[in-house]
Image (cartoon, helix red, strand yellow):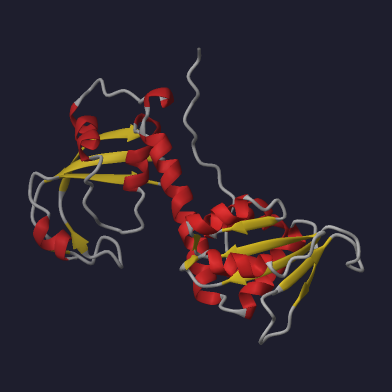
Length: 267
């Protein structure tokens, strides 16, 4: 309300994205604030405007549509303000061809990055210690493994044993250690895990955080040792999300959507 009352000036441009007709309506403020509850109950705050033009959403870049789609009811356009100004003034304003819309890739990357941040944040906040081991066990099951979790408390460095067969006798046998902290996992932790892996077994470390270069260098020399950091864990979550049960889908409520990808240039 502060911006609507005091910052908005006569002569300013306003843009209204209408969901009803999928048009962007652009107007110029023509007067000061008035309080009139009569025209429409629940919307008593008014600023008179002069409507200038209506453009289809397809006339704007994807970045401009993303900015104007903010959840806030009244806000200032900044990144794509010039595009909306041109739309209000130029009679020959034309849609931007998708191949020339550089914002498409930026918007897609931002949406993906926000989703990844959300997943990591939820796991870090809600699953500490043994519950995180349970989650990793469930993820391994979604990947086709059978798992046995160590009970809560001291586990000797092995949180999960994963295998393919029902009884857990046939190789590969995978010994898993999980770390629910968001810090870096170093060489001592990785070396200790490898010391518990038998000749015909595999070791797997899963962490929400990062892995130091020294630890990765150590693991690179061991063909039966695998390290998964937070970023790769999120990729696995996204890949196998449909196989999760309702408990973990409730923890990570995600919705499948399609986002624009940059068009490949023809040779």
